[in-house]
Length: 266
Ligand code: KIV
Image 1 (cartoon, rainbow, N blue to C red):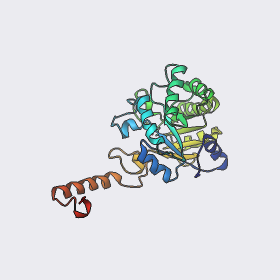
Image 2: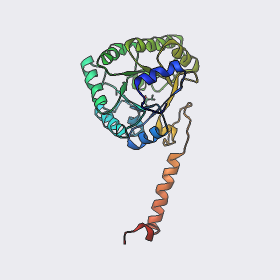
Image 3: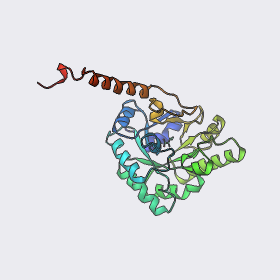
Image 4: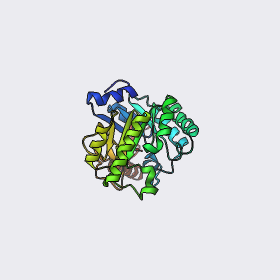
């Protein structure tokens, strides 16, 4: 996929058996890089609470912060579809508040929103869809539930969990989701979820058989310097490279090796 990606393009990918590529981005630079690399979907993930703002979970980020980062991503004018995460507590209280909060993300430049949970959020998903706001669902490991689940734990190891995840995916589809993220489940559960619905399922730590894959930008380019989940494949060592670059600059300044004659205005 190269030209402007729409919700319809994403939906059609499943029928065409074209794997979907989604990567998170949080600002103009990372969005420009993702778009030039040809990803289909840029997700302004609430993971920015951790990757950009340094919190230990995703619960601390607000709608205003999500809108701010969505604006920066949209400024890159990407061909990719921009999906913005609805943060915790922005879609839990009432349908009115849910639509108003989603509208803030759409006005900031998103083409769709993502929210976590299935059956329990079906009313919100249906109302957003009626308000012409495309919704991406998110089932399996849902990071905003960390206080209920006791941390970022692989889901779908027990039969009752598998049944709930399948029920959630079907509820997302029935309520109007155009795609669903399935996170942190054994491969056979990822496969079952993918087979259970007609909309694309984009996996993260959900095995090889989903309709697409998503990774967090900082993990993919090696900008994270801490815990790395088993499913993460790192394609660059940006943390080390950038640390070295800044250290080299510091050394050059201290040894009066910067700026040189070619780098000054005469
Ligand atoms: O916020 C995020 O980065 C996400 C992905 C893990 C899918 O929701």
